Length: 423
Image (cartoon, rainbow, N blue to C red):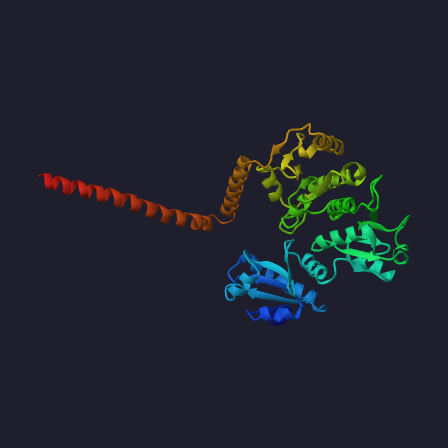
Protein backbone atom coordinates (compact mmCIF):
# COMPACT_ATOMS: atom_id res chain seq x y z
CA UNK A 1 0.00 0.00 0.00
CA UNK A 2 2.83 2.36 0.87
CA UNK A 3 4.44 1.88 -2.55
CA UNK A 4 1.10 2.48 -4.30
CA UNK A 5 0.64 5.81 -2.51
CA UNK A 6 4.21 6.80 -3.32
CA UNK A 7 3.68 5.91 -6.99
CA UNK A 8 0.49 8.00 -7.17
CA UNK A 9 2.24 10.95 -5.52
CA UNK A 10 5.15 10.77 -7.99
CA UNK A 11 2.71 10.44 -10.89
CA UNK A 12 0.78 13.54 -9.77
CA UNK A 13 3.97 15.54 -9.33
CA UNK A 14 5.16 14.43 -12.77
CA UNK A 15 1.81 15.37 -14.31
CA UNK A 16 1.97 18.88 -12.81
CA UNK A 17 5.62 19.33 -13.73
CA UNK A 18 4.98 18.15 -17.29
CA UNK A 19 2.68 21.12 -17.84
CA UNK A 20 5.52 23.55 -17.10
CA UNK A 21 7.84 23.99 -20.09
CA UNK A 22 11.56 24.43 -19.39
CA UNK A 23 12.74 27.22 -21.71
CA UNK A 24 16.09 28.16 -23.23
CA UNK A 25 17.48 31.16 -25.09
CA UNK A 26 15.44 30.04 -28.09
CA UNK A 27 12.39 31.56 -26.36
CA UNK A 28 13.40 34.96 -27.77
CA UNK A 29 12.47 33.56 -31.19
CA UNK A 30 9.47 31.54 -30.00
CA UNK A 31 7.73 34.55 -28.41
CA UNK A 32 7.52 36.31 -31.79
CA UNK A 33 4.48 34.22 -32.73
CA UNK A 34 2.46 36.30 -30.24
CA UNK A 35 1.32 33.40 -28.05
CA UNK A 36 0.71 34.26 -24.38
CA UNK A 37 3.23 32.91 -21.86
CA UNK A 38 3.30 32.97 -18.08
CA UNK A 39 6.94 32.64 -17.05
CA UNK A 40 8.86 32.01 -13.84
CA UNK A 41 12.48 33.14 -13.84
CA UNK A 42 14.30 31.20 -11.14
CA UNK A 43 17.65 30.03 -9.78
CA UNK A 44 18.11 26.40 -8.61
CA UNK A 45 19.71 27.51 -5.32
CA UNK A 46 16.90 29.97 -4.44
CA UNK A 47 14.80 28.83 -1.47
CA UNK A 48 11.81 30.97 -2.48
CA UNK A 49 11.91 29.40 -5.96
CA UNK A 50 11.85 25.90 -4.48
CA UNK A 51 8.82 26.79 -2.35
CA UNK A 52 6.86 28.21 -5.26
CA UNK A 53 7.67 25.38 -7.68
CA UNK A 54 4.78 23.07 -6.59
CA UNK A 55 2.37 26.02 -6.77
CA UNK A 56 3.70 26.86 -10.23
CA UNK A 57 2.84 23.34 -11.29
CA UNK A 58 -0.73 23.84 -10.09
CA UNK A 59 -0.89 27.14 -12.01
CA UNK A 60 0.09 25.29 -15.18
CA UNK A 61 -2.53 22.64 -14.46
CA UNK A 62 -5.24 25.30 -13.94
CA UNK A 63 -4.38 27.02 -17.23
CA UNK A 64 -4.09 23.84 -19.29
CA UNK A 65 -7.45 24.43 -21.05
CA UNK A 66 -6.52 27.97 -22.09
CA UNK A 67 -4.11 29.15 -24.77
CA UNK A 68 -1.69 30.38 -22.08
CA UNK A 69 1.55 28.42 -21.93
CA UNK A 70 3.33 28.16 -18.61
CA UNK A 71 7.13 28.01 -18.58
CA UNK A 72 10.18 28.53 -16.41
CA UNK A 73 13.69 29.81 -17.09
CA UNK A 74 16.84 28.80 -15.21
CA UNK A 75 18.59 32.18 -14.98
CA UNK A 76 21.91 30.59 -14.00
CA UNK A 77 22.01 28.78 -17.36
CA UNK A 78 20.32 31.35 -19.57
CA UNK A 79 21.51 34.66 -18.16
CA UNK A 80 21.00 36.39 -21.50
CA UNK A 81 17.30 35.56 -21.47
CA UNK A 82 16.99 36.79 -17.89
CA UNK A 83 18.80 39.99 -18.86
CA UNK A 84 16.38 40.57 -21.77
CA UNK A 85 13.53 40.63 -19.26
CA UNK A 86 15.42 42.71 -16.65
CA UNK A 87 15.20 39.99 -13.99
CA UNK A 88 16.76 41.34 -10.78
CA UNK A 89 15.33 38.96 -8.16
CA UNK A 90 14.25 35.34 -7.86
CA UNK A 91 11.66 34.21 -8.52
CA UNK A 92 10.32 36.79 -10.98
CA UNK A 93 6.96 36.06 -12.61
CA UNK A 94 6.08 37.68 -15.93
CA UNK A 95 3.20 37.46 -18.36
CA UNK A 96 4.49 37.81 -21.91
CA UNK A 97 2.41 38.25 -25.05
CA UNK A 98 4.37 39.25 -28.14
CA UNK A 99 6.27 42.42 -27.28
CA UNK A 100 4.15 43.10 -24.19
CA UNK A 101 5.25 41.99 -20.75
CA UNK A 102 3.78 42.48 -17.30
CA UNK A 103 5.40 41.58 -13.97
CA UNK A 104 3.30 39.87 -11.33
CA UNK A 105 3.76 41.41 -7.88
CA UNK A 106 0.92 39.83 -5.93
CA UNK A 107 0.73 37.01 -3.41
CA UNK A 108 2.19 33.65 -4.41
CA UNK A 109 -1.16 31.89 -4.29
CA UNK A 110 -2.36 29.77 -7.17
CA UNK A 111 -5.74 31.49 -7.51
CA UNK A 112 -4.20 34.98 -7.56
CA UNK A 113 -1.59 34.02 -10.14
CA UNK A 114 -4.12 32.26 -12.38
CA UNK A 115 -6.50 35.23 -12.26
CA UNK A 116 -3.63 37.58 -13.15
CA UNK A 117 -2.77 35.49 -16.22
CA UNK A 118 -6.41 35.32 -17.32
CA UNK A 119 -6.83 39.08 -16.97
CA UNK A 120 -3.68 39.88 -18.92
CA UNK A 121 -4.58 37.41 -21.66
CA UNK A 122 -7.80 39.21 -22.51
CA UNK A 123 -8.80 42.79 -23.33
CA UNK A 124 -8.87 45.37 -20.50
CA UNK A 125 -12.67 45.34 -20.62
CA UNK A 126 -14.41 42.04 -21.37
CA UNK A 127 -17.83 42.30 -23.01
CA UNK A 128 -20.85 40.29 -21.84
CA UNK A 129 -23.53 39.46 -24.39
CA UNK A 130 -25.72 37.02 -22.47
CA UNK A 131 -27.69 37.52 -19.26
CA UNK A 132 -26.50 34.21 -17.81
CA UNK A 133 -22.93 35.47 -18.14
CA UNK A 134 -23.59 37.77 -15.18
CA UNK A 135 -24.35 34.77 -12.98
CA UNK A 136 -21.18 33.09 -14.22
CA UNK A 137 -18.84 35.93 -13.34
CA UNK A 138 -20.57 36.45 -9.99
CA UNK A 139 -19.75 32.84 -9.22
CA UNK A 140 -16.15 33.32 -10.32
CA UNK A 141 -15.31 36.69 -8.73
CA UNK A 142 -16.20 38.29 -5.42
CA UNK A 143 -15.39 41.70 -6.86
CA UNK A 144 -15.55 43.16 -10.38
CA UNK A 145 -16.43 46.38 -12.21
CA UNK A 146 -19.14 46.80 -14.83
CA UNK A 147 -20.01 49.43 -17.45
CA UNK A 148 -23.61 49.38 -18.71
CA UNK A 149 -24.71 51.25 -21.82
CA UNK A 150 -23.43 52.25 -25.22
CA UNK A 151 -19.67 52.01 -25.47
CA UNK A 152 -19.10 55.60 -26.51
CA UNK A 153 -18.71 59.03 -24.95
CA UNK A 154 -16.55 60.44 -22.18
CA UNK A 155 -17.80 58.11 -19.42
CA UNK A 156 -16.94 55.03 -21.49
CA UNK A 157 -13.56 56.49 -22.45
CA UNK A 158 -12.75 57.21 -18.80
CA UNK A 159 -13.84 53.71 -17.72
CA UNK A 160 -11.84 51.99 -20.46
CA UNK A 161 -8.74 54.07 -19.72
CA UNK A 162 -8.80 53.30 -16.00
CA UNK A 163 -9.57 49.62 -16.68
CA UNK A 164 -6.47 49.43 -18.87
CA UNK A 165 -4.36 50.86 -16.05
CA UNK A 166 -5.76 48.49 -13.40
CA UNK A 167 -6.03 45.41 -15.61
CA UNK A 168 -3.29 43.56 -13.64
CA UNK A 169 -5.30 44.04 -10.43
CA UNK A 170 -9.00 43.57 -11.22
CA UNK A 171 -11.71 42.36 -13.58
CA UNK A 172 -13.56 44.85 -15.76
CA UNK A 173 -16.65 44.12 -17.84
CA UNK A 174 -19.13 45.90 -20.12
CA UNK A 175 -22.69 44.90 -20.95
CA UNK A 176 -25.72 46.34 -22.72
CA UNK A 177 -28.78 47.31 -20.67
CA UNK A 178 -30.86 44.22 -21.55
CA UNK A 179 -28.11 41.95 -20.19
CA UNK A 180 -27.50 43.85 -16.95
CA UNK A 181 -31.06 44.96 -16.05
CA UNK A 182 -32.05 41.47 -14.88
CA UNK A 183 -29.37 41.62 -12.19
CA UNK A 184 -29.21 45.24 -11.07
CA UNK A 185 -31.56 48.22 -10.89
CA UNK A 186 -30.51 50.93 -13.34
CA UNK A 187 -32.05 54.38 -13.12
CA UNK A 188 -30.15 55.96 -15.97
CA UNK A 189 -27.52 55.05 -18.54
CA UNK A 190 -24.63 54.90 -19.04
CA UNK A 191 -23.71 53.60 -15.58
CA UNK A 192 -20.67 52.15 -13.83
CA UNK A 193 -20.82 49.99 -10.72
CA UNK A 194 -18.68 47.66 -8.66
CA UNK A 195 -20.02 44.30 -7.57
CA UNK A 196 -18.61 43.63 -4.13
CA UNK A 197 -19.74 41.10 -1.55
CA UNK A 198 -23.17 40.61 -3.17
CA UNK A 199 -23.83 44.37 -3.33
CA UNK A 200 -23.71 46.92 -6.16
CA UNK A 201 -22.06 50.30 -5.51
CA UNK A 202 -22.40 52.89 -8.27
CA UNK A 203 -19.98 55.50 -9.51
CA UNK A 204 -21.73 58.86 -9.36
CA UNK A 205 -20.94 62.02 -11.24
CA UNK A 206 -20.64 64.87 -8.76
CA UNK A 207 -23.46 67.37 -8.73
CA UNK A 208 -22.82 70.26 -11.10
CA UNK A 209 -20.29 68.31 -13.19
CA UNK A 210 -21.01 68.07 -16.89
CA UNK A 211 -20.83 64.65 -18.51
CA UNK A 212 -18.76 66.34 -21.22
CA UNK A 213 -16.03 67.24 -18.71
CA UNK A 214 -13.64 64.48 -19.81
CA UNK A 215 -10.73 65.52 -17.58
CA UNK A 216 -12.88 65.54 -14.46
CA UNK A 217 -14.41 62.16 -15.34
CA UNK A 218 -10.97 60.62 -15.85
CA UNK A 219 -9.76 61.92 -12.48
CA UNK A 220 -12.81 60.92 -10.44
CA UNK A 221 -13.19 57.56 -12.20
CA UNK A 222 -9.56 56.69 -11.41
CA UNK A 223 -9.99 57.72 -7.78
CA UNK A 224 -13.24 55.79 -7.36
CA UNK A 225 -11.98 52.55 -8.93
CA UNK A 226 -8.69 52.80 -7.04
CA UNK A 227 -10.60 53.02 -3.76
CA UNK A 228 -13.23 50.37 -4.58
CA UNK A 229 -10.94 47.65 -5.97
CA UNK A 230 -10.51 46.05 -2.53
CA UNK A 231 -12.92 44.11 -0.38
CA UNK A 232 -14.40 45.84 2.64
CA UNK A 233 -12.21 43.90 5.08
CA UNK A 234 -9.44 42.07 3.19
CA UNK A 235 -6.52 40.07 4.53
CA UNK A 236 -3.46 42.33 4.27
CA UNK A 237 -0.28 40.65 3.07
CA UNK A 238 3.16 41.63 1.81
CA UNK A 239 1.77 41.09 -1.68
CA UNK A 240 -1.04 43.65 -1.44
CA UNK A 241 0.03 46.15 1.20
CA UNK A 242 1.66 48.43 -1.38
CA UNK A 243 -1.50 48.40 -3.49
CA UNK A 244 -3.59 49.29 -0.44
CA UNK A 245 -1.27 52.20 0.24
CA UNK A 246 -2.07 53.52 -3.25
CA UNK A 247 -5.62 54.30 -2.09
CA UNK A 248 -4.20 57.22 -0.06
CA UNK A 249 -6.62 56.36 2.74
CA UNK A 250 -6.09 55.64 6.40
CA UNK A 251 -5.50 51.88 6.64
CA UNK A 252 -7.02 50.33 9.75
CA UNK A 253 -5.22 47.07 10.54
CA UNK A 254 -6.42 44.44 12.99
CA UNK A 255 -3.23 42.70 14.13
CA UNK A 256 -3.64 38.96 14.72
CA UNK A 257 -1.47 35.86 14.97
CA UNK A 258 -2.32 32.62 13.19
CA UNK A 259 -0.88 29.32 14.33
CA UNK A 260 1.11 26.98 12.09
CA UNK A 261 -2.11 25.47 10.74
CA UNK A 262 -3.28 28.96 9.75
CA UNK A 263 -5.99 28.90 12.39
CA UNK A 264 -6.87 31.99 14.42
CA UNK A 265 -7.58 31.50 18.15
CA UNK A 266 -11.19 32.26 19.22
CA UNK A 267 -10.26 35.37 21.23
CA UNK A 268 -8.51 36.88 18.21
CA UNK A 269 -11.41 35.97 15.93
CA UNK A 270 -13.70 37.83 18.29
CA UNK A 271 -11.38 40.85 18.16
CA UNK A 272 -11.25 40.75 14.35
CA UNK A 273 -15.04 40.56 14.14
CA UNK A 274 -15.30 43.56 16.43
CA UNK A 275 -13.01 45.65 14.19
CA UNK A 276 -14.82 44.48 11.06
CA UNK A 277 -18.21 45.37 12.51
CA UNK A 278 -17.23 49.05 12.61
CA UNK A 279 -16.84 49.35 8.83
CA UNK A 280 -19.75 47.01 8.13
CA UNK A 281 -22.17 49.02 10.25
CA UNK A 282 -20.76 52.47 9.48
CA UNK A 283 -19.64 52.18 5.86
CA UNK A 284 -21.13 55.54 4.91
CA UNK A 285 -19.16 57.20 7.70
CA UNK A 286 -15.75 55.63 7.20
CA UNK A 287 -15.47 54.16 3.70
CA UNK A 288 -14.43 57.41 2.04
CA UNK A 289 -11.40 57.96 4.31
CA UNK A 290 -10.59 54.50 5.74
CA UNK A 291 -9.66 51.10 4.32
CA UNK A 292 -10.05 48.31 6.88
CA UNK A 293 -8.20 44.99 6.88
CA UNK A 294 -6.40 42.41 9.01
CA UNK A 295 -3.04 40.66 9.12
CA UNK A 296 -2.47 37.02 10.02
CA UNK A 297 0.97 37.70 11.51
CA UNK A 298 2.16 40.90 13.20
CA UNK A 299 5.27 41.32 11.00
CA UNK A 300 3.77 43.98 8.70
CA UNK A 301 2.24 45.91 11.58
CA UNK A 302 5.49 45.70 13.61
CA UNK A 303 7.39 47.11 10.64
CA UNK A 304 4.97 50.04 10.45
CA UNK A 305 5.07 50.69 14.19
CA UNK A 306 8.82 49.95 14.47
CA UNK A 307 8.07 48.07 17.67
CA UNK A 308 6.67 44.72 18.73
CA UNK A 309 2.90 45.13 18.98
CA UNK A 310 0.75 42.95 21.22
CA UNK A 311 -1.71 40.58 19.59
CA UNK A 312 -4.48 41.24 19.08
CA UNK A 313 -4.26 45.00 18.57
CA UNK A 314 -5.09 47.81 16.15
CA UNK A 315 -2.84 50.19 14.26
CA UNK A 316 -3.83 52.85 11.72
CA UNK A 317 -1.48 53.89 8.90
CA UNK A 318 -1.79 57.20 7.06
CA UNK A 319 -0.88 56.03 3.55
CA UNK A 320 -0.10 59.58 2.46
CA UNK A 321 2.31 60.70 5.18
CA UNK A 322 3.24 57.21 6.53
CA UNK A 323 2.45 58.29 10.09
CA UNK A 324 0.76 55.72 12.26
CA UNK A 325 -1.62 55.83 15.20
CA UNK A 326 -2.16 53.41 18.09
CA UNK A 327 -5.11 53.62 20.52
CA UNK A 328 -4.35 54.13 24.21
CA UNK A 329 -6.96 51.57 25.25
CA UNK A 330 -5.89 48.08 26.22
CA UNK A 331 -6.56 46.01 23.07
CA UNK A 332 -8.25 43.30 25.13
CA UNK A 333 -10.75 45.86 26.40
CA UNK A 334 -11.17 47.79 23.15
CA UNK A 335 -14.87 48.14 22.26
CA UNK A 336 -16.74 49.20 19.13
CA UNK A 337 -17.53 52.52 20.77
CA UNK A 338 -13.91 53.14 21.80
CA UNK A 339 -12.62 52.24 18.33
CA UNK A 340 -15.23 54.52 16.77
CA UNK A 341 -14.01 57.44 18.90
CA UNK A 342 -10.38 56.62 18.12
CA UNK A 343 -10.95 56.60 14.35
CA UNK A 344 -12.83 59.88 14.57
CA UNK A 345 -9.91 61.43 16.45
CA UNK A 346 -7.49 60.06 13.82
CA UNK A 347 -9.49 61.73 11.08
CA UNK A 348 -9.57 64.97 13.07
CA UNK A 349 -5.81 64.71 13.75
CA UNK A 350 -6.39 65.05 17.49
CA UNK A 351 -4.33 62.00 18.53
CA UNK A 352 -0.53 61.66 18.59
CA UNK A 353 1.03 60.59 15.28
CA UNK A 354 4.18 58.49 15.17
CA UNK A 355 6.67 57.59 12.49
CA UNK A 356 6.45 59.39 9.17
CA UNK A 357 8.72 59.46 6.16
CA UNK A 358 11.74 61.41 7.45
CA UNK A 359 15.34 60.32 7.02
CA UNK A 360 15.82 59.46 10.71
CA UNK A 361 12.63 57.40 10.73
CA UNK A 362 13.81 55.49 7.65
CA UNK A 363 17.19 54.80 9.26
CA UNK A 364 15.58 53.58 12.46
CA UNK A 365 13.21 51.38 10.44
CA UNK A 366 16.18 49.76 8.70
CA UNK A 367 17.79 49.15 12.10
CA UNK A 368 14.55 47.75 13.56
CA UNK A 369 13.94 45.36 10.65
CA UNK A 370 17.56 44.17 10.70
CA UNK A 371 17.35 43.56 14.44
CA UNK A 372 14.02 41.75 14.08
CA UNK A 373 15.30 39.56 11.26
CA UNK A 374 18.39 38.63 13.26
CA UNK A 375 16.26 37.82 16.32
CA UNK A 376 14.00 35.57 14.23
CA UNK A 377 17.00 33.78 12.75
CA UNK A 378 18.46 33.25 16.20
CA UNK A 379 15.16 31.96 17.53
CA UNK A 380 14.71 29.62 14.57
CA UNK A 381 18.27 28.26 14.41
CA UNK A 382 20.93 29.70 16.69
CA UNK A 383 23.73 27.58 15.22
CA UNK A 384 22.94 28.64 11.65
CA UNK A 385 22.81 32.28 12.74
CA UNK A 386 26.28 32.00 14.28
CA UNK A 387 27.59 30.40 11.09
CA UNK A 388 26.01 33.02 8.81
CA UNK A 389 27.16 36.03 10.80
CA UNK A 390 30.01 34.64 12.89
CA UNK A 391 32.24 33.34 10.08
CA UNK A 392 32.24 36.57 8.01
CA UNK A 393 32.91 38.62 11.14
CA UNK A 394 35.72 36.26 12.12
CA UNK A 395 37.36 36.51 8.69
CA UNK A 396 36.94 40.28 8.70
CA UNK A 397 38.53 40.48 12.15
CA UNK A 398 41.48 38.37 10.98
CA UNK A 399 41.96 40.56 7.91
CA UNK A 400 41.88 43.75 9.99
CA UNK A 401 44.19 42.20 12.58
CA UNK A 402 46.70 41.14 9.93
CA UNK A 403 46.67 44.56 8.32
CA UNK A 404 47.16 46.35 11.63
CA UNK A 405 49.78 43.89 12.88
CA UNK A 406 51.66 44.10 9.59
CA UNK A 407 51.92 47.87 10.00
CA UNK A 408 53.14 47.49 13.58
CA UNK A 409 55.73 44.84 12.67
CA UNK A 410 56.95 46.99 9.77
CA UNK A 411 57.27 49.92 12.11
CA UNK A 412 59.22 47.77 14.64
CA UNK A 413 61.58 46.55 11.92
CA UNK A 414 62.21 50.11 10.75
CA UNK A 415 63.01 51.16 14.32
CA UNK A 416 65.45 48.27 14.74
CA UNK A 417 67.20 49.13 11.47
CA UNK A 418 67.47 52.75 12.59
CA UNK A 419 68.93 51.77 15.92
CA UNK A 420 71.45 49.47 14.22
CA UNK A 421 72.65 52.23 11.92
CA UNK A 422 73.06 54.59 14.84
CA UNK A 423 75.07 52.02 16.72
